[in-house]
Amino acid sequence: MENGGALNADSKRVAVAGESAGGNLAANVALMAKEAKITTPVHQLLVYPVAGKDMDTPSYKENPSTVPLSAKDMAWFFKEVLPAKSAAADKRLDLVNRDDLAGVAPATVILAQLDPLRSEGETYAGKLKSAGVEVNVKTYPGVTHEFFGMGKVVDEAKQAEDLAAADLKKAFGGGM
Image 1: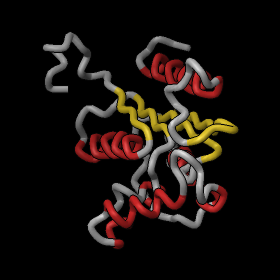
Image 2 (image 1 turned 30 degrees about the vertical axis):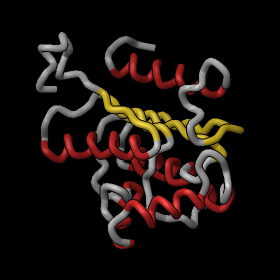
Image 3 (image 1 turned 60 degrees about the vertical axis):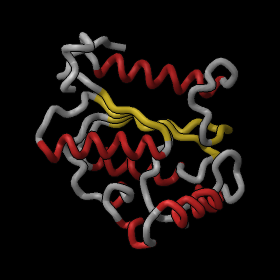
Image 4 (image 1 turned 135 degrees about the vertical axis):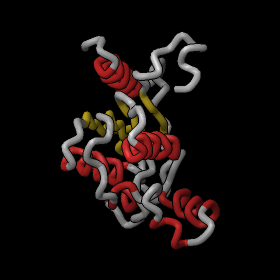
């Protein structure tokens, strides 16, 4: 935002976006901007975000060995990446249990049916809605984690990309 002028960009109108762990980072940027009372994003695009610590959700149970991301993979990430098991309770990781979501930027939450992160994404979208945040959430059937961006070959990915583009265009004042 500090370099908006040099980039010929409007630093008052920015969005954040990310997939998986990047979706978690994007959500946290939006929350931190709100907390710091600085220019907040006009929108957040969260694609199958890591949003919780509960590995006993329906989607974790349904996807123990899915490729490219399985419940076993997520257990490995939690074990190997976090400095201690207690770190999973950090509010930056455990978004679904935050109570300060009101006033954060509107969100598009894109999820994959065959993904251990689906349930926490659905829960987070529901928590945002309950906090009065405008949310467009869509779970795409028959696809796995990492489907987004494959619009040339996967119909659901093209639909998800189109949804993301439409919501971002609307957020930037371009209508639908």
